[in-house]
Image (cartoon, rainbow over all chains, first blue to last red; front, side, top):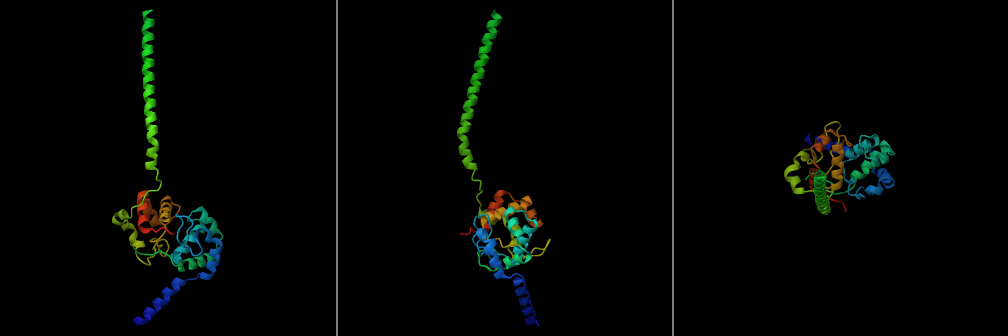
Length: 108
Length: 134
């Protein structure tokens, strides 16, 4: 019984991690839109005050981009870029960036 | 006639006194001007230098309850993973905290926390959590 539960839990977690975005589409979008400031894999911020995106949580990235798009976050640069992204684009980009390796980590 | 003389003398004395006072003021101003550049240099490192140890000893308690738990999710107003901040760019961490403080970013918990932080606190926390990207 416990084993079955664990399997279900793992499936659930795996599903949550992969969610909806498609990483390969996200990569293409990143090459067009994000690369200049964040680098293709989200690991090369062009200035110190820009974030590393690589390895960030999928759902946080979706949330941040959505907030920029709808104006809940008011950064003028990001607003302009997020405005041209569809919901699908945002999920694809989040899938791509969240899968890249980086120094970002949860605990310290 | 003596009255005229008296007022002339008084006038001259006053004028001399005023001149002396003016000269003194000028000197003081010059001194201040000479000091100013040094003062500006000392105060100008517009960037507050962060002290990771100060953050560790006194300031991260308010962060670890969410950002120190792997996989932790926000509970309000929506549910999603809190961002990973360890290993992030220090200057970005400061920028994000300032955006919460000013209201550019709206997350209620983070607005409350950032509002309580000074520039020095932010720099300290950024020094503690951040790693500049190469």
